Image (cartoon, rainbow, N blue to C red; front, side, top):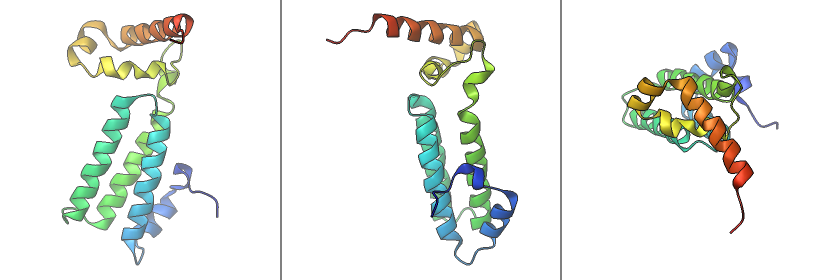
Length: 141
């Protein structure tokens, strides 16, 4: 069987999943898929990786505590999947585009005052220059 991907989350798939006889199996499969995909797209960005993991854990806790129905959890997981898919293209909105290493500027952008004072574009330029310097100057100890 081919490994499922976030591209498989069509409206038909979602509606069939919500009406499944065993929705807990579909929920677990979606959770695992989203966790793997978000870990892959955010592997160089600890801040984003932690945020995705916390949101998934919080959602699953609500489901376990019966605060959300199966259909609500599936809908939330689909939204998380869409955010995860958008995460991989996030660097393209900057000029020049930021790669995965440079997108780690989120560690600085997590600080609200830094974003307000500097702005996202300036922080992105700092990240781009910092990665360029590190690649040029890095030496093995």
